[in-house]
Image (cartoon, rainbow, N blue to C red; front, side, top):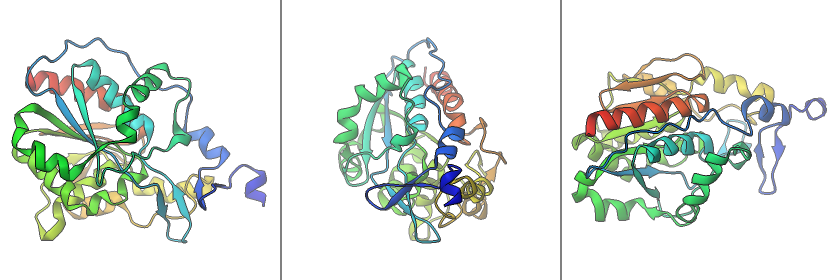
Length: 284
């Protein structure tokens, strides 16, 4: 009751899940983003497509059994997409089984005209995305048309995607065909899919920015999460040989070979700039 009075209690939703508390939302979300509307020299080559793998799952069960209302973080998805669009790239939007994309709409920056614009532009694809299996069946042979695979963050990126063999197939396909892989925050959970069926982790020894487990352990205190995480992402990646370059949930971004990563929602704009500039430099 005291937590509720102080605004520290996670808010119960109609499906029994919890969204962040009033205090947590005030501290961690904003009606506008730090997006920089940069005029890039647009890419005009053949590799103009970027595959974006979104989550279709909403609720994460915490250690205490409570469910966190999650999905992909809209800022982490849409700011990088804005930069990549401005750099001349377009998107194939998929979910594992073709169910609608799930966003953390409680984090949507409602007063940001740029984010509103790209969200509306792709709204029909978010509501009716392609199936990842269909992409594998139809587009694997056309790797020359693709520049990158992008997996946005949000805690929802840890639901289903790390255990999806098709995600592993796509990341291996990107790796083998010299495509870039772009991801941030909890999105690097997708990289774990490359270890399924006892396969070697293809990013062993890579430097990467990832949301810190230490911060996830602290956020229940302000009601951001309704309990402790079911498992630690940065811990698992470190155990596989990844070299985590950040200790805070900040604006850190990292480029190592063809892997581009960011530390948190705060890194979304920087990740978009790094991805757009890197792709333009390498592909032009």
